[in-house]
Amino acid sequence: MYPTIAKSVGDIFAAAWNISNGTVVPKTEDVVMKNGGRLVDATYLYADLAGSTKLAHTLKKEASATIIRAYINSASRILRHCGGNIRSFDGDRVMAIFMGSDKNVKAVRAALGINWAVYRVIQPAIEAKWTDVSQSYTINHGVGIDTGEALIVRGGVRDNNDLISIGDAPNDAARLSEHRKWNTNITKPVYEDLDESIRLLADGRNFWTSSNGIAALGNYTTLYHSDASWEI
Image 1 (spheres, rainbow, N blue to C red):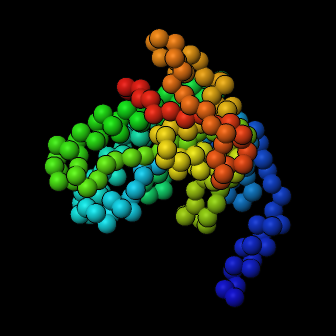
Image 2 (cartoon, helix red, strand yellow):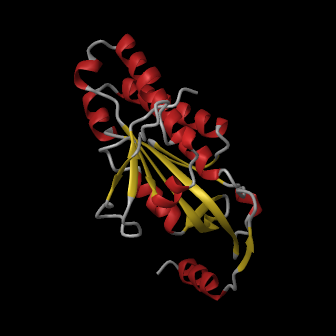
C-alpha cells in the first residue's frame, strides 16, 4: 500500500471537526483544510447542458467546445447577476449557491434567465453559424434547485483541493438538473418561498407544473417544474 495513504486517512479520521455557522457563502481559503467546516442555510442551483456526449460524437470538437463554452459562460454570467456564488464546474455543468432571505427567489430568477439565454440567444447563434448543425443537434438543458442546510468542507490535497457541499439540498439540486422533461425543476420548499412575480403570468395563471416526485429523488413527494423564461 502506498504508505502516505494509510497515514492521511488515519489523520482525517482522527481530526476533530471545527464547524462554524456561515452567514455568507465561503471561499476555499475560508475553510480550514484539515478539519474546518461551515454550516449554511442555502439554496443550491445546478445548471446542466444536456446531450454533451451526443454533441461530441455528432459535431467537430471546435463546434462542441463553442456550444459548451457559450452555455457555461451564459449561465455563469446570469448566476452572478442574480446574486449566486459559483462554486463548482464539472464539464458542461455549473453549480451556484445562494444565501439570504431572498435566496430562493434569486435562484429561480437565475434559472429562468438561463432558460431564456439557451433558447433565445444560444440556439439562434447555433443556427446562424452552422446551418447543418441545427439539423442534427437541438440544444437542451436542465436546472435543478433545492434549499436547506448543508455542510461545506474542503476535499483533496494541498494545492489540489476544492470546496465540497454535503447535504440533501446540493444532492437533490444536482439530480433535478438531470430531469429533462422540463427545463427548470425545483423542490416544494423553494416553490413555496417564491413571490407571485415568478409563479404567475400577467393573467394570473400559474406557469409551474407540480408532480408527485421523481423515483431517484426520495426526499420530496411534490416537485415543481417549468419551461418559462425570464429575459436578463
